[in-house]
Image 1: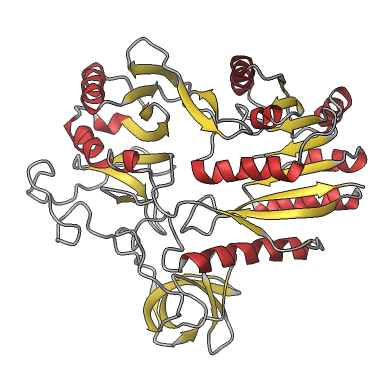
Image 2: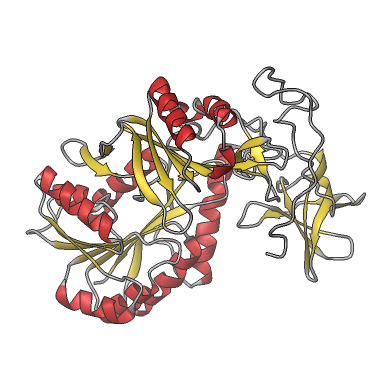
Length: 478
């Protein structure tokens, strides 16, 4: 933090207003001009490297003539490439492709025009079937390392390849010369990659980006906007501004803009303890709704900005439908405990399928929303709040809420305390939905030590064109 209070020297002005003239992406001086992704520290090499494999994070793996391992962004197995090394370590180097001399058959033209600078989708250069084979192989490898045997093939859960993301966060920055930037974090940089559209966002959200940029430029104090959350629900588009400091004139400008655009608008104001309030509709608490599948018809869940819900609606539906199918029809009103339950993403469809469901969530606000959703849908789901990472709380919870089936859908840190207790106090089935495969296999080892066996496994391609994978495992105990 030593740089606080220091003013950066102003950049030379372009002499052209972003509001009066819009240039092409490649034209010099355009606000969309690609940043030099090589970075000043990058060192080019003339040695041609042969890529032999993909690392778990999607980078190509090669070795230099001296035997040093190199992890290469944008390289695929079978390719011969020259690289620029942007980070040198004792045992390996990190690099990016300078030139592909021999291309892999699986290399494709990325669908996104901002791929060279945006840090988001890192596997766009790999054909879709290759992306999914890679993710399945990563999951299988992680399970194998823990000695977990697969009962058969890993099922792939996937839907749309573009236009699938219904929530995202855009960063806002204002330079020393007042230039406004709106976009995502750039590759290998803290700078922003400015974008006019995003192929992963649902079309309704992607279409908002040019209008958002124009509005930010028109504000009197755009530097007070930290970031903007984009949400798409059954009601349409909702934007949530992170306003670092209140500005009366800009607030009125945002309200007028939201009415013109036909979107819902909310704001979190303040730095340390931001206050949430709706701006459009004004002085009203509009409910936002999502649909999830059930046996008879879709269920409608109410949410508010800040509640967790899956970014990919199509893959979320696949997860729910697969969970219901794997667990099967309840036998005589089997009891089910849904842990890390959120607003009822799994609890409510499983209750509709006939299970007697109790739910536990760490955040009290989402517990209230889950109970409200259950009452409105006339489903008997009883939710409560508890710390699911504390071993003492977990033991007490499982004593008070015995169940035949347990569903786990934890955040990235996993559910180690729960799996350790479930190993000591077994149930007939444990369904584990994971957004981090590394913590999931760590937790799975505890279940296997407790006598469970893996019966089914699936890879959920929640974020297409990225190396990120999600998974679902079903453990049973005879």
